[in-house]
Length: 376
Image (cartoon, rainbow, N blue to C red; front, top):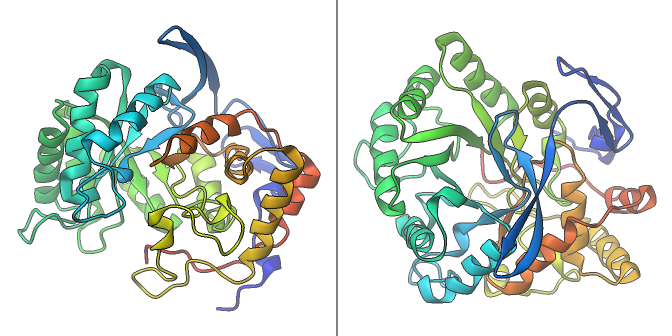
């Protein structure tokens, strides 16, 4: 398939009503009742830290406008760049101090070690009542019949394993990490509904799949009278905008919130083109597991635009790139992976940046459509 720059229907180009919502797009602005964003003030250690609170999709649950990505924590023997308990302590404490109380992990991160570290951090640095905790299932944890995928056996086995590692009796947001083509959709949705009704899970979410697959799962939930997904965790950044084609319109129509992962494109948007910052970014591959390129040569012009705007404003490149993600009204809370203190302070600072129309045009005009990565 030939992908030309002119083929992508960007968010700023959308016009008219979002089906079934009563809301309209106008340029880069969203007019209507959804999503609702509320402000709250968190007081921590004598400081007034204001963190915006937003609805998790169209649910009644409020979460911090930024989410702490906990793939950064885990067993260093498996992931050399991952932080253990001691090294991760400053990041967890900083997250709490900044009001970032939405934490996202997955059973596969460090093969369970991320969940274990997050569970210990919950008990040591904060209260379970103060944290919105999200985790995921799908990737193979072992070779047994319940080790991976989205069968009923896997859902029941993996939710209990995550609860043990997290040292909690419930998960706020339980997400399927990928679509499982080997399991009937109805089997998955009923099993997920059952763990909600059992009190083990409060809300359901999904991650990285085709829009038709997500729509099919939501439809199955409706037909069966089962719990629907309230979030979609998708890859979205200035360098990966394919969700704007179909997924974001579907999310707006259904009142589902987007939780973008890799909003800085694995750090490519946080530093001049060609430079590597963290140990993890230096070791990032050029293609995904299917051989699909993660980045294109044309991306250099986008990164250059981020750099120019950041220098003109006197802020970091990360702040500009994240501000662009946050300006999209479909986005509930970007997932911020942090291994250094400035990663979270940059993210919080991005909340106060309002990009001009000229800046938005400069950031968006060089995008070249591409194949999505990390799923098929």
